[in-house]
Image 1: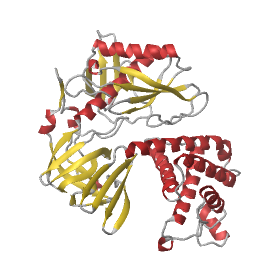
Image 2: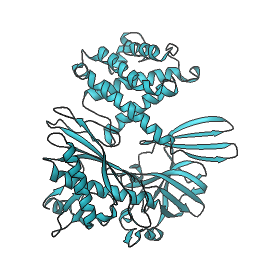
Image 3: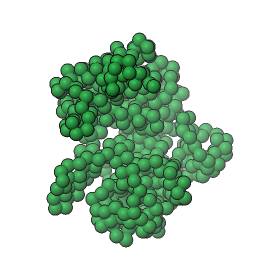
Image 4: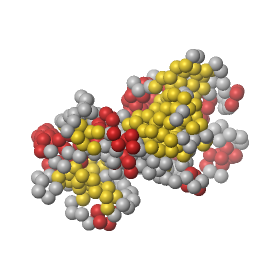
Amino acid sequence: MGLERMTAVLQGSRSNYDTDLFHPLFRRIQKLTGAPAYQGLTGKSDPHHTDQAYRIIADHARMMSIAIADGLLPGRDGLQHKLRLIIHRAISELEVTFRTAETRSGGILGDLSQDVVESLGETYPELSKNSSKIRDVLKLAAEQYQQLQKRIKSNKIHQSSGSNHTQVEKSDGFYRREFQCESGMKQVELFLPKLAELQEMGVARTDDTYKYTVYSRTSHGYDFSGCQEVEGTVVVIITGAELCGRVSMGKVCGVVLDRTCFYSESGGQAGDTGYLRTQHGVLEVLDVQEHAGYVVHVGVVVDGEVILGESARMELDQMRRVGHMCSHTGTHLLHAVLRTVLRDTKQLGSDVQDNKFSFDFASMGTVNQEQTAAIESLVQQHIGEGHSVSRLQMELNAAMAMEDLTMMEDEDYPSPVQVIRIGGELSPLTSLELCGGTHVTNTSDLDSFCVVNLKGVAQGNQEGHMCDGACSQTGHRKRRSAGVKVVTAGVRGQVWREH
């Protein structure tokens, strides 16, 4: 038995939650939200899910407090991402079930964390030692959650048909579907299943090498006519956590093809969007994720139905893809310039979007105004010089032998690897980075560059911190750290647009 079950037994309770481990948290939630007192109701006896929300928030408060005290920070991958989702779920319960104001969520979670510290701090001294850090991280996470919700609200997808109304929202790694019909409102969280099970079924992994080959540079911009030559077959359809044979109009699903030219979110670069068109239906692709070698096109069926085994033609959002290519090449240019302007620079992470990118790095000392101006000027200079950008594929050991190669230390690079080269031997700029992202083929395709925000996110002996959509968690480091958010303009030509 764990602590909670043993406590329940010793205190004569049939529920882990009816113990002195949780009662202080329930009282705090009631005091801060003004909700009815916790009664221990479940199922149909808890029609408004109030007591369920009590349990979720209290349990999550304990988990997130201990995780942060142990050094985990919210982020985009692995355990960091799971912590982020736990925080988001607790905030959602506060705002949806208890109807707390958006600005109060972070403070409430912070107060609950202090109750956790008081309850468990004597046994787990790292809780008491990091109590201020826990409160600060939760406050920042709540602020970023509100920013995320604002972005979601500005990108909702609506499909109406008669009395039916479908609304799809993406919330940083999980999908929430709201479906209204004659039987009333039902809200379902759609989680992608463990796709590793497909290998046991004999389903071949997705061939996504076409993401690098379907476009070419012309005198008018980038030509994506190569997409028309890539035709995939629907090998898996996922709804909820179940595999199915077909999915009809208005339904959210994940579709796996045997081959695809869509880029799945990885390496800091956001996934592609667009459409999959089969013989009997159209899937609007809202996001693309990869797991265990399977590329999942997540979206909503906007016409007809998508059926297993049918062929699918692919239509990329070309403006978005080219924006990602510009931004990703921009991160490499910025990284090269940072190593020139600043001393002892180390990349920590990046967030590549179609209209901007952010870049996190650690360096000795702070970045002053003169250095920021020099960084901007050098990047602009390299854009104007029109350096070639090429992709090289080679075995990992061969890449590691290349002089001046840069890479993320905490990344896992399966062989063979992709190396992005900017410039060359006779060029004033040479950049070599391990990278699986998509890029333009010449730096002149970046029309402009400017730093719009420069913010230090950790210093001294503090651990790597997190900021929205950018920072990566790192270990202890005795150096100052600064995160740079930069924005690039669009490329010239037929796929050009202002940002």
